[in-house]
Length: 560
Image 1: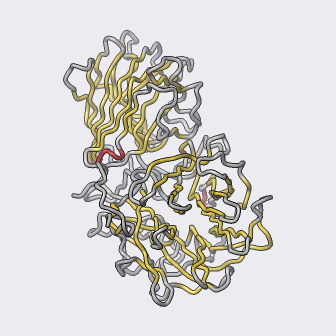
Image 2: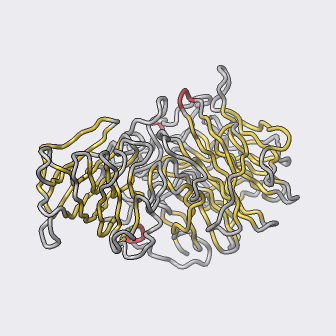
Image 3: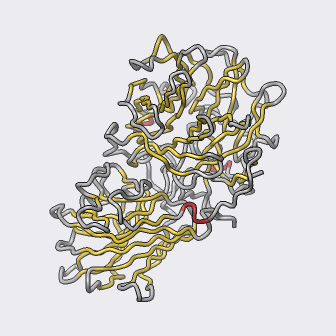
């Protein structure tokens, strides 16, 4: 039997929603301020996953100006067997200031998982984390967290369920408040309904999306409840099994719940799938902190746990515990597959008109007006735009960091003719937090140089003491990332030895290290590697990139 190794999807892939259609499995995950929005991954064996498409690709949503960690939250993927239709419900979190958490929730549908997807159908603005359930009688229901703002009421609010009109949008009748959680961990959210035998089961996330995170379950004979909680009184999946009482506590961190005996942290926010081999699994988010810290550069990733039904009809992990593991048994009858360390490596040489779909861009959409392979075939041309402090139009082409030990590399040609024109290679979390090894003009304007520019909690740091002259406006750049340290290297020709420009502590490029919305612990998106350009002069300069590579030195898993 194959062993499934977690995380099954590395790097920023949180809030996984898993479904099966025939022998194919799909997972949708959150994308926050990144475009294209809503990643969809595919697998046939639950162990090996590839990005197959995105759901929001035609400007259905405007992410410009999105503050960390708002944007597109918790997509829920479902399949209506009666109509043969895929459905995606999602929230667009637009405001978190004052802990108001203003989000509009929508649904889109498609006949094929790769689209095209319909125009968004408005559902509600009552809260966030919507999910759809298609019942046997043909009715459809939405479940969601109703966000609570009243003083003296349990935060963050109730899980509510209502019948939904999927043809015209909107809710039929009233929302039914069904629970504020099934354990004492509080912070109930991400409700998802399943039907098994004679019961409706409600799977929810709890404990906040930090170290106390978990998956809880309740059941009812009626869809609107009442729902009885799992009799253990504890989450069915978590990284920190010890008891916690935190009802009404909105804290998403709960650093006191960090489990020093587990490589996996923050396990929670799960979704259930019934396999073609008549087995059950829960996909859930997880994190891998830097060693000896509680900083998580890779954000929240996707993991899988094998489940089973008890004789009295409750869902539990197959090993009888509720502690999420780094490995779980694979499908019955599957053969052992050695997952190669190159699975998450990235090599793009830009020899085709279409480049790798794993490239993502913060805030703005990718457009041939600023990034293409046609202006100079065989190269990726990126036209400079806003500063990277901008939440509007930064010219960034980025890929998810998937390991705590890796190398990213590129080469480029760039002719800056103004001191605010840059191009190069870097690491990026959001508009306030990044590292950029860039070609630019010297301060005198007489030559092209290589210098580091850094954003740390919104502060601009220009490393003017480490400056290298670039005589032919061409350079190869390399960043060796190892456990929160970034070693920046360069060479002027392919036959030169690599030279070090500087080594920078970038451990702050992590969920807990950045300055997110006031009242939040920081962010919960994740680190990206990127190539990009800036032109705060005339928006007419461009850089030509020959290639882009990422090599994971340990396959994306740190075991020490």
